Amino acid sequence: MKIFNGDIVYSAENHELSLGGTRVTYAEHIKTHPKSIAMVESDNEKFLTLLDESGLTGHGGAHFPVARKLRAAMQSPPGGKVVANAAEGEPGSVKDAALWQYVPHTVLDGMLLVAHLIKAERLVIWVHDEERATLRSIADAIAERESAGNPIKLDILRMPVRYTSGENSAVIAGVRGEAIAPRYGLDKARPWGVGNPAILSHNSETLARIAMVHNFGREAARQHLLSILAQDRRIVREVSSSETYQQAMPEVKGNPAILFGGYGASWLSWETVKHLRADPLMLRAAGLSFGAGIVGALPVDACVIEETGRVLTWMASQSARQCGPCFQGLADVSDRWNLLVRGGMNQEGYSILLERIGLIPGRGGCAHPDGVIRLVRSAITLFGDEVDAHLNGSCTLLESIPFLPIPGVSVMS
Ligand code: SF4
Image (cartoon, rainbow, N blue to C red; front, side, top):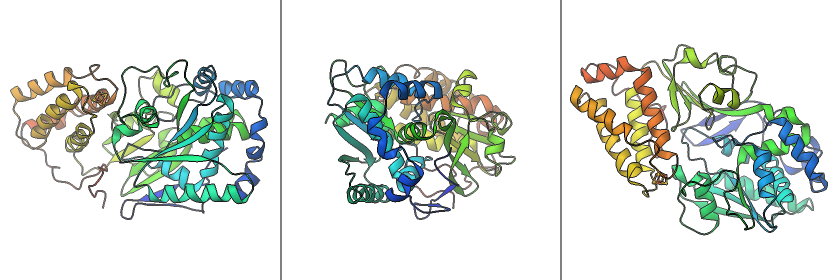
């Protein structure tokens, strides 16, 4: 059972999403989701067992088992908060926006179910300030429920766009009224502080999947949203974990490299990707990460070294500046990498770059720098010929049209 009945296409030009249909109102939603209004009577243990059997994991990137996180939160005293994380830090991802703009009531049902399970007293939506269409749709959803006699009380917390502001521990900190920055070494199953009422944050897609499993059974957990960047379009597409990427993305043909997972993940070749199944757990077993579900098909006339440099520079600027290896180390690696991009690096400089890259992983308070370095290393491993071309000053693809979206910079036109 799918959430959407087709692709959602994002226009980078006017920042709008369009679906081959319209936004689902509350009246339409309760017709197609019959358990929506009965959820407060749900049998907790039966539902948790169903979630366990479905194998549902979080869709924010970490893919932690949902039922396990809920059971842990249920040990906390009542009176906590359920947070829907709608702050997509990944510039290539528009799946949260698609959910909130087209099927807000499915996500809200997920929040209500979780609140019921953990006896939370407040619902919070954590969203970037500039997501105007999302905020409009949420306001409409609240009004629709109110006029249907099912009012819902929500706190909406808005914050500036930043890569790390959607990181789970940063969200929890922000909801507590503290500085919005990742915190060190939090247990993913108990991120709210032992003994206190839970502040339980879930990715928006995770909440929608919880509601879908509740309504339609365990098979509803076998679907995932991809954010596909291909040709000149961004598409949100719902795919089944039994599909290969080749089946799921027929528009990708002969692209030299695939950004797989997001800006903190990896470059892979299409030859590798096309045979993989869109199944986060199978990918993890193969040493790969589904991440935020981003699949970016690099055009044939784009330079992977230059694209990596653009992402690296932006990711370095997104450090929360708490740990030296992150904010100083990434800035240093970014400067050196961009020298390589421009053909201004010799072998000795390249050796120093590799040494500096090796100093960063595992030394930040959160996974931000590790992800960036993973991406850089995958470019080096997979595209050694491209690195050599840059060391020889002979890359012919430089100054091609930028492909990967960077906030504030126009691309893919
Ligand atoms: S590694 Fe970077 S983003 Fe993470 S906590 Fe440290 S400074 Fe912040």
